Image (cartoon, rainbow, N blue to C red; front, side, top):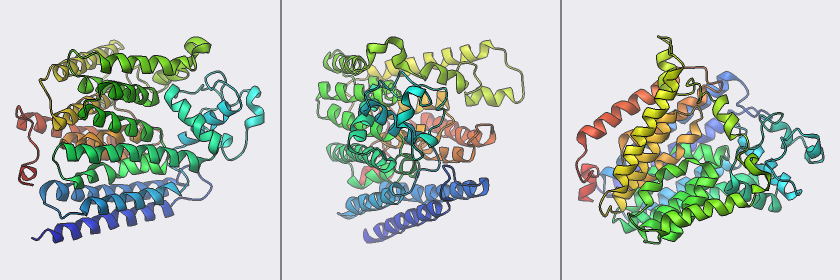
Length: 444
C-alpha cells in the first residue's frame, strides 16, 4: 500500500463523518431545544455512533501508517468543516449555552451572576424569548459556572448576546488547544496527523461546536497548559491550568501531571490564579460557589445513585447508605495514589506527561460516571500523544448517553463503562515501564 492510499481512505472517512453529521443536524425539528421527538433523538444518536465508527477507522490509520506531508492540513480542514456544520446549527442536545449567554447578559447589566436566579424579579428587564425562555433550572438554580467561565461569558456578551457568538468563542478557544497539541506533537517527534485523534472526535465536536459547552474553553486552556509544560514555562502552565480549573473544575485532577517535583512556580502561580479569579466575584462570600453544592445532591453524587457502579449493583441488591461514602473514599484513595505515582516519576517526557494527564482525567471521570456525554470529550486531547484504548473509548462511547436524557437507564451507561473497564485491564496487562506507543508508530 502506497502512502497515498491511506490518505485517500482517511479523507473518505472524514467526508463520511461530515455527511453523517449533516444528516444528524437535518433531523432536528426547528424550534425544539431537543431533537423534537424520541424517535428523532435516537436516529440522531445512531448517526453520531456511526460517525464514531468512522472516527475509529481514522485513528487506526493515523497511528499505524506513514502518511504523506499535508495530511495534517487536510485533517484540520475536515475538522473545520465539521465544526462549521455544527456551529451554524442551533443547540438541540443540551440547553446549557443559553445560561452562558444569560450570565454574560446579567454581568453586562451590572449584576453579580451568583446573586440572583434567572427568574428573580430583579432581572425581569433582561428577559426575552430567545435566551431566557430556554434556560434550564431558571426558577431555582443560581449559576454553577466558576469565575473564569463567567469572565468569558461577560466578554462575549459585551460583543454579542447570542448563542452563535458564544459557540464561536468556545470553538475558537478549543482551536487554541488543538494548535497547542499540533505543536506538542512536533516537540515529541510524532506525526502531526495524530491531531485527528482529538479534532475528529465526534463527541468533542458535538459538545463544543454543536451545543456550545464550556468544556471547549477548558480544553483549549488545558491544551496550551500542556504545551507550556513541554516548553518548560512552569509559571505559564500554572496560570493556564488555574484558569482551566475555574472554567470547568475537572482539570484540577491533572495538576500532578504538570507539576515538576520540587519546583514552586507551577503550584504557586496556579493557586494565585485561582485566588485572583475568585476575588473578582468574592464580594458575596460563599455564594460564589453558586449551585455547585445543590448540584451534587441533584445528580445523586451524595446519595450514591449518581455513580454508575453503585446504581448498577443496586438493581440486584439493596445497598446500605454507607456504601456511597465508602465508594467515594475508595475512589479518593485510588486516585490519590495515582496522583502521587505520577508526581514522583523521574523526568517524564512529553508522551509520558500526556499519558499521565489521560490517566488522571479518565480515572476521575470514570469514578464520577457523569450522566452527561460532554463531560468525557476532553479525554481525547491527551490521546493525541499517548493512545490508551480505554481512554479513547471513554472519549467517544458516551455518545450513547444522549439517548438517555432523563438519566433513568442502566443499560446505556453499562455499555459505556464495562468495555472501558475491560480495555483498562488490557492496558494494565500490556503496560511496560516505558508505556510504549502502538507498535506500528515506532516505525513511523
